[in-house]
Amino acid sequence: MADMQELYSIFARNPLILRINTIIIVFKIHLISTRMEEQTMEKKDLDWGNIGFSYMPTDKRYVANYKDGAWDEGGMTSDPNVVINECAGILQYCQEIFEGLKAYTTEDGSIVTFRPDLNAERMMDSARRLEMPPFPKERFLEAVDQVVKANAAWVPPFGSGATLYLRPYMFATGPVIGVKPSQEYQFRLFGTPVGPYFKGGAKPLTLCVSDFDRAAPNGTGHVKAGLNYAMSLHASVTAHAAGYDENVFLDPGTRTYIEETGGANFLFVTKDGEVVTPKSDSILPSITRRSLVYVAEHYLGLKVTQRPVKLSELDEFAECGLCGTAAVISPVGRIVDHGKEICFPSGMDAMGPVTKKLYDTLTGIQMGTIEAPEGWIRKIV
Image: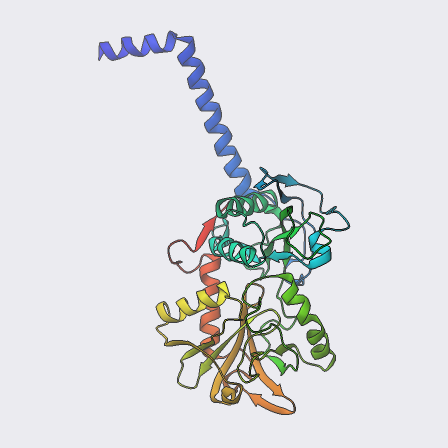
């Protein structure tokens, strides 16, 4: 015991050791203070329960540039404006891709994102298809973390029904006058608080079968490129003018199979409770749909089939929903095919029972009230 006291006395008299101990203590206090500040950061004074699905600028966004065959180190900026050359590839030939994901405030006050690794991987696939340099997965995840932390006050509170929508996107900035890939690109990521994608919330939608095609056979329908969505705008405006909530796009080859809408995948439920999702090479591989399929099988014990779905068999289904990051699941009550009305009996007035279970389970996982599969939730704050 005396030896220990003597040893302690020697350490205590050593100024270098005292300095190191002081630095360690100060660092620990700073770390604890930072964590407490993040956890208790006051939210913006907004009417969170009544915000729509529209752009609202937040404090910071992430920017990185690609030039001479490499990405720069990137960083945060408060400037929401983009300045590019008049002949930039994005302006001349629509060389652009994007993603969509959300940050949530969970029941315990943490801020998390849902499966951002899959968004990073899908964006890399989209980049390769459009001859763009993939933005590295780890850097994508770091950018998400930085933007969410910098805008933590903009992440809606738990129970508000709102989320912080994150929009990563990449576009060609280098000048090109001939039809060819650009040599320079910019990756950006911003966040904006949003409410429900469809104004009616859980009110069943009415869709119409479109005469237009969303994507060409063997084209870019399976990648998340802005050009695909631009192609759907006229069809969407036409549908809205006729009183419908959205379009139903058919396969461009035979126009007999269900594909998707302008911004969401389909999910059907049979009269005996089987979940069916359309399968096609020109449908965007939805992360939400993929997650719902897992939830249906592993949480609810339902049978799930992914197969081509004919337009002619729609009246055999009991429920229908649109699924995607923005909407999660929105119920569909009826689809109108050139005057013929197809109704889904279990979802005419409200979200059907199976669709509701899927919605409640997935949103419970996202919000932290239901235990998530390993790797699905990335805690940021």
